[in-house]
Amino acid sequence: MAEFTKLLCTQAGRLGITFPSHDQIQIVTCNQEQLRAKIQAIKQGYVFVILNRDSCYGSVKNCEDIGVPTQCLKSETVNKVVTRNDQATLSNILYKYNSKLLGTNWTINVQGLPVNIFAAPVLILGADVTHFKKGENKPSIAAVVGSMDKDMAKFSVKVQAQYPRADRASDETIHCLKDMVKAILMDFYQVSGSRKLKPVKIIYYRDGVSEGQFENTVMEELDAIQAACAELGVAAGETYRPKISFIVCTKRNKQRFAVQSRQKTDNLEPGTVIDGDVVAPKRFNFYLNSHKAIQGTSVPCHYYILYDDSKMNADAWQMLTYYLCHTYSRCTRTVSYPAPIYYAHLACFSSRARMLARYQHFDWDNGRPSYNELTAVIKPNIKMFFI
Image 1 (cartoon, rainbow, N blue to C red):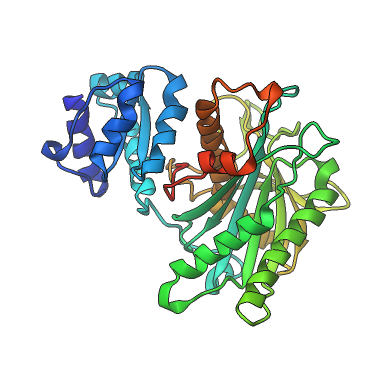
Image 2: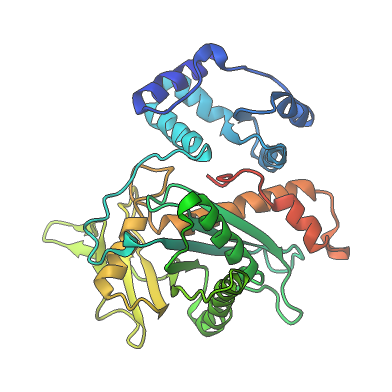
């Protein structure tokens, strides 16, 4: 462990990330039952937790209610870093560290966008819902993240557990979206400080909605976002109606594209857009291959613009979406779909792990914890807990 911390300090210096010196780092050995007491004794700072088994992840994350951020590492990862001096892995660890402490890993020059989307305050929302297997009576977890700066480096996140409605096995619609968006808008206003900024545009990227659910999801969730804005306006004694855009990202599709030459078939280059011939004829939609496949055939995401007050053209939507694929703070490459959606997915996963760890002996077939009880468990006490 001493060698690992030395390597972390050295790599942080190379990356320009503020990091404690080696002699300021405390190494503590404990079991799972002792972990909370050890973190409480630290009170402030940052804790790397080396796990011998993945099942401890949720228990570690439940300790963040103390207010100390944690980052889990597998013991195999630490061994690999020490034996190989793996600088790429060290960098990824430090990118997460810096993001959790509200640092900015990189920014993107947005001057190439066909319209100056970020000239005025804009809120980018990402939303996702994760479900358990059919037949399990556990609640779904919904997460919504909202950008707090134009660099897409800092996000506010709200999570909520939700049981399906009486006649459904699961429910893709986010039930408490109005309250979640209101809370994010209030965070946006507070982060702007003395400028007291309110978004003039809200761009809502939604994951996990099938084509058959488009109408119901748009109707309910668009109404919820509009209601959140209206209520905040009434509270401030004014009319608040920002322009709202609603775009769905579909990752699970059967379309594959390739470049055919005489010698071989290659994957598409990152940034390739397909918006004709094979797209849905009656909707504003496009495919975007935003990443470079490490192995096998790259899978493009299918984007549907279902509602757009801003009336942006196809080029603007495609370039904005590709821009957001560059802002994922855990990776130096472009990722396969926009970072806000990625973050919402990660927030769902982390909250789900917290819930399962807290209720590991609970009989879900014969009881249900209340919404307030579940929210107290999965509600994060760390701003960028999902990174």
